[in-house]
Each structure stands twice: as C-alpha cells, then as structure tokens.
Image (cartoon, rainbow, N blue to C red; front, side, top):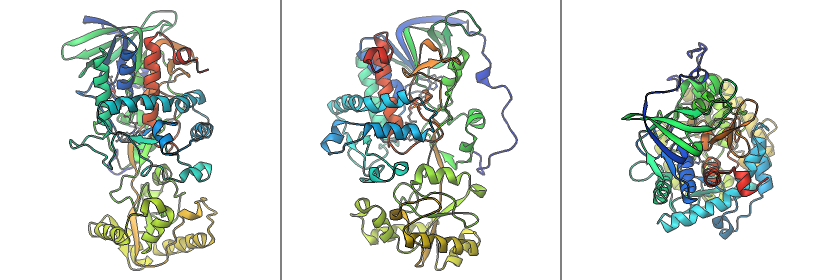
Length: 530
Ligand SMILES: Cc1cc2nc3c(=O)[nH]c(=O)nc-3n(C[C@H](O)[C@H](O)[C@H](O)COP(=O)(O)OP(=O)(O)OC[C@H]3O[C@@H](n4cnc5c(N)ncnc54)[C@H](O)[C@@H]3O)c2cc1C
C-alpha cells in the first residue's frame, strides 16, 4: 500500500508487463517426474484438490513455493449442510445464487455460482465428517458474520447464515498466531498424503508446458509444469491435467495498478504470508494462451478495528467524510462503507455516534448484544478513548475540532441525519430504520473508518467446469483454475451476502475438479450437472 494511502497519478509500472511477454521455454532441466495431476499452490483450494484427486485414485503432486501450507481467516461458507439443518436454518438456494450473481453485475458465470450453491453443502458435509474424525471441532459461525435475521432484510442487505468454522470457540487465531483455518488446511494435507499425494514445498511453478499445435500459443494440451527448487529445474508431467490454485493478486502491485487501483488506497493488507499472493497463476496461464477473467477483480476489503462496536461488522453509525458530510450507505459496513471510504476526499472518514450507543447497539442487533451489559460496552469505549482510538467531544463543535472536520458541516449533517432517524426513513442511502442511530445526546464520539485489504480475487477466464479458456472461450485441454485464481466467479467487489463464500468456493471447486480430473473428466461430465 502507499504510505499515505494516495493513488499516484504517475504510472510507475512499465508499459509491457510480465504477463504479456512469453518467455523462452526453460531448457536446462535435468530431472523429470510423472504424475496424473499436478496441483500448483498448497493453500485452501490446492490442498482440497490434491486430497480429492488422490482419494479418487490419482497420482498427485502439489507444489508450493512457500515452506508450508497456508490457511487464511475463519469462515467457510456452504449451503444446505448438516449443521444448518440441525440448527433449523433453511436457505433459499435460488435466491442465494441470484444475489451472488447480481452482486457481480452479471459479469460472472452464473453456472459456476450455481454449482457452488448446489454442491457446497454436500462437499462441506464430507469435510465435516473428515474433520471430526481427525479431532477438529466444527461449528456454525452465524453469530459474528451473519446475524440471525439479516436474511429477512431487503435483498441488497441480505446476509445468510452460511458461515462455518473449524473450531467451536470465538478464537480467530491459533496459539502460534496462524488463522484457525490453518488447522483445516493442515488436516486436509495430511489426509491427502495418506492417499499417496506428494507435497513439494519451496518449489515454484515457473512455466507450463503446452503441446505444440497451430498458432502462437499452440492448441494442444497442457502436459507439464516446470518447477524450480534448491536443486534447479524439474519437469513434472501431468498425464490428466494441471490445477492452478495459486491464490490472488493482492501482493502484486503492478497487477493492482493495472487492474484494481482502488486497492492501493486501502490502509494496509493483512496477509499472513506477504509476497506469495502475486498472481503467478495468471501469468503462467497467459503464457500458454489463457485469457484473463471476464470480470473485474473483486477485492475483499474489511474494516479491521479493535473495537467492533464503533466500526465494522456489528453495528452501523452515521459516517462523515473529512468535510463533515455524509457520503455512503452505512449498511453493511463491509464492503459498502470500506469501499466508499477509499473514494472519500482525502481517503478519510469517521463513524459518529452519541452517548446512547449501548441502546442503539441493542436496537440494531438485539441477539448479539443481549448478553453484553451496558457497563461493559461503556468501559470498552472509554478505554478506546484513553488509547486515542476513539475521539470524544462534549459537544459536536468540540468533536469536530478534535477530528478536524468543519463544525458547521458536521452539525448540519447530524441535524439532517437525525430527521431521517426520527422519520425512520433515509431518502439518501436507504439505510433501514433499524440501523439509523440518531446523534443527539452528548458526549459525542468519532471513530476513524479503516479499510483493510484481505485479498484481491482475480484470475483466469474459466468455463462452467472451472477449465481455463483462451480469448476465444475455448477450454484449454488439461488446465484448470480453482480458488482465488478461478476467474469469472466474483466481480467488482466481494459480497457479504454469503459469509465464507470464498473459502466455500475453494472447498467446492477444489473437491469437484480434483475428483473429476482424477477420472479424466470435467466436473459436468462427472457429476452430470448441466
Ligand atoms: C487474512 C485473510 C482472511 C481471510 N478470511 C476469509 C474468511 O474468513 N472467509 C473466506 O471465505 N475467505 C477469507 N479470505 C479470502 C480467501 O478465502 C483466502 O484468501 C483463501 O486462502 C484463498 O485460498 P486459495 O487456495 O485460493 O489461495 P491461497 O490460500 O492464497 O493459496 C495459494 C498458494 O499458492 C502458492 N503459490 C502461488 N504461486 C505459486 C507458484 N508459482 N508456485 C507454487 N506455489 C505458488 C502460494 O504460496 C499460496 O500458498 C481471507 C483472506 C485473507 C488474506
């Protein structure tokens, strides 16, 4: 990220990019091994694909340029799982598929979304059983990321209770500082190894090999991956195919400048392993004739704030820019407020609330705040005021001075917003009345809105089988893309409609593509989906 969160007008990237220059084939290769399937990347998607293919009888190698597997975050989204059924949660699959598709402004491939929606439940249940058999706890995570009744809001605000987690407590991290999901990814890797899959770490995929045919890039199959490790280059033949699972482009500044410059205005990125999410799969694919996703990148931008009450996920407050003016719809906080912040003047904005915040919080989220006492909430806020994370003023003028916004503008904005609250109707942004929290009784508070980049899903153009395609939409034989490098699934911005959606699609397509390819088939041939 830029230190000052500014997006430079001077383009610092060269006019020709690495993905546009096909390199000379690597020739000094002294070692060669043959597998049915080569998986590139041992993250969430790659480990699931390696496991599923090996379990189905294929000879599999998974190459990973880092020294170990990686697991991000907590939520894994799935629809129609045993856990949901036990909890009495019924989800409308047609509606969910429509809403994910609409969120991408019709750029995405509906069939991919539909496959996720239809198959994620059974795939999750399979891994639920495996995880429990291996001693992992599994539970629903509907308390934090999809409130119990947000599926009853109007469509654009809906969130479904799709999130599951591989723990039964509130932890986000393990004792070693790694995300909880790491437990799951490690478990899947070990299960894959038990089926004979080989994992090669500190082994980087450098080039794909595509059989010659007519045309510049050939028309033949992708038959091998050239990798590098401490001993030099090695050719890994893939008799049935190559599955790219190389993750997103969030760590590649040149790609962000070219394809998703808004991301450069985020405060920071929160990768556990910086530098690995560099869009390699896109480059590898394009060198053998693959096209990029037809969709715009879909950055996952969250508000990471130590105090959820004031900003992020749980509650919604009046937001103002540095001019003291309201500028966005405050529901849902992520990604609507976090995205809008990056287009606010000076890339700065504040959440504003008054001394009745415990009352407002309980009105907005009765179930979430039922067990939280008023004194507990007040103690949290006062602690944040002491540490300088929340600003306080006895009057609006005083608050305006502290956060350096024009007092007259702030007072005007608050007066207008209070009218909307009293009427229970927000004509500007349509925030539902339950989330309108008037700002009337001092002391008044402000909290800076953060915008933090998690990942920038963007990948290769794929068809409904997750098979990589060329510019003319022809599937490239033997080449598949899953996880964040699977294009055409998300577009423009990451939707919060289906919490855990991204891990959900990693899991679903990892399993479906892995299993089908082990049988030498596409997922539609194997599962007879369409
Ligand atoms: C902090 C954080 C929290 C998140 N939380 C959630 C959440 O709660 N729910 C959710 O649904 N999503 C979440 N996400 C988003 C997303 O689900 C994750 O990014 C997920 O890990 C994507 O999985 P993946 O397998 O596609 O890629 P990754 O997990 O990033 O794995 C890709 C792997 O490929 C390797 N690789 C790349 N290039 C090469 C190469 N040339 N050769 C060999 N190996 C290579 C990388 O080193 C990496 O290990 C989160 C993301 C982040 C960053």
